[in-house]
Length: 139
Image (cartoon, rainbow, N blue to C red; front, side, top):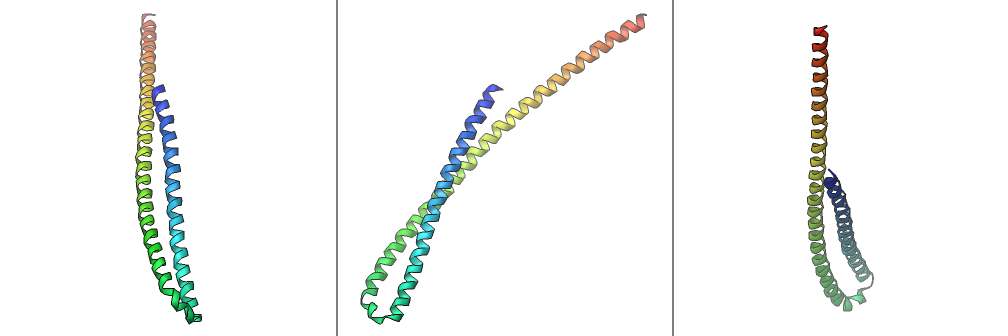
């Protein structure tokens, strides 16, 4: 029994560590998504400025090239972050399932010990009852 308790404690630690990793991966994905949104907002602002000040058209082409490169880079980061989140979630699920298997095994052992104790008590009570019956019959 003691070994399962130790395994469960160790597994709970692993689950907690994996939850932290999963949270960090989600945070990184959120940062990248915010950067993508910020870039889209910046592009919209630049388009508005271009309409208000047509003289900005001279540099707008370079801006668009740079913005497209940034967007491609952010999209790569987004895909990588999404993959990292997916993998971290799968690992968390796996570690948690292992913890549950240990807990179920421990509960099964406890239940089996209780059934065995109940069986022993029943045998003892049956024996006491039998002896008592035999003694009463002799009297």
